[in-house]
Amino acid sequence: MKFLVGTYTDQTDSAGIYVIDSCGDDRFVVSDQATIWLRNASYLIEHPALPLVYAVSEIGDAAGGQLAVLRQDSRGDYGLWQVVASGGLDPCHLSLSPNGRTLLVSHYSSGSIALQGIAPDGSFEPKQTIVPHDARHLAAQAMGRSWHPRQQTAHVHSATFLNDHQFVVCDLGTDEVLLYDLSPNRPLQATVRKCWTLPAGSGPRHLVAASNRLYVVAELSNAVFVLANAPNDQPAVLSSLSCLPDAAGGFSEAAEIQYDPQASALWVSNRGQDGLVRIPIAGDALLPLRALPDLGAHPRHFWLSHQMLLVASKDDDVVRVIRRDAQGSLDLQSVQRLSIPSPVFILPVRQGDRDTS
Image (cartoon, rainbow, N blue to C red; front, side, top):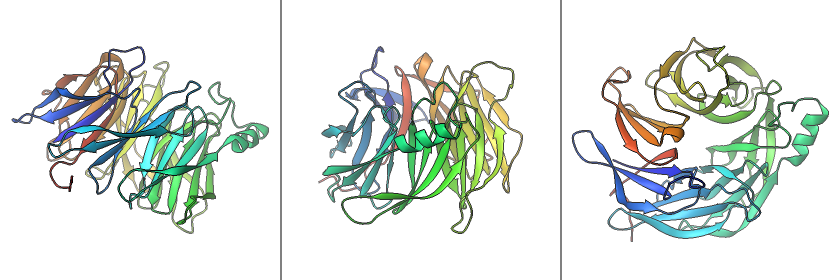
């Protein structure tokens, strides 16, 4: 099994995107020969059929962010193939439609989504459509909703496809979660179908979807929200729960959320109260969480499967590999620590099952 690890390169010792590969006996190694230079590669996503990986270059200065395509060769190694402007400042999240034809790019500092068309060969089409949230932020301010110091402007933190023609956006700056319809034609266009408004100062960051429900993690309030999203549902918040194990533990910001079908639970990473938590789900209720501490300083992104958990701990420059047993419990006695500077994203990539011609 192989993983690509995105990192922050500014003011760090990182060389870009690193490769983790299996080396037998359920162990992994960081490949020094396969590092791919890309500045601040904070989010990566794999094409559903082609041997390609898309990555953001999270840049917030005047030049703006970038999008890159990595192409896999016949040996299974990745190299840069195409780099274009992302269409805004600080691109921080990607989502690719299931048919592989549209890439969503979330811009934190610009407060916008770029709709990037993908050609049949996986390359970027020449035109983008930008969906700004400036007007939504002004409306939120007029209603007294955006009051946190980090909500002085729109901050689109993620845009996630539900299917080829619908996606959901988390805007940290407006406290909104929005369902968009995407037109099937070119040029790409998107229109809002639903809007869930979270409590003021929540700061929605990322979400996962399962069984007509959206599970949203809010970075600023450190809460998880359950949203109704059946076709005829009104945009209701069904329940919520703090994702912090210690309510008096000082500063912390939630980062990543994933759904674990094996245990019918949500997993969330917390930066500040460093660690992960597992939150069981019963219907639309979120049950008391279980804390998983000692997983590194500033755990940001993590990857979860039936067999293992990988955690990117940015501030101690380590990716931790932890095995899971048949019941889904973690084997914390045999954690493997892989040294990678400032890791912030972990992407598993397929090997040997696609045409690389």
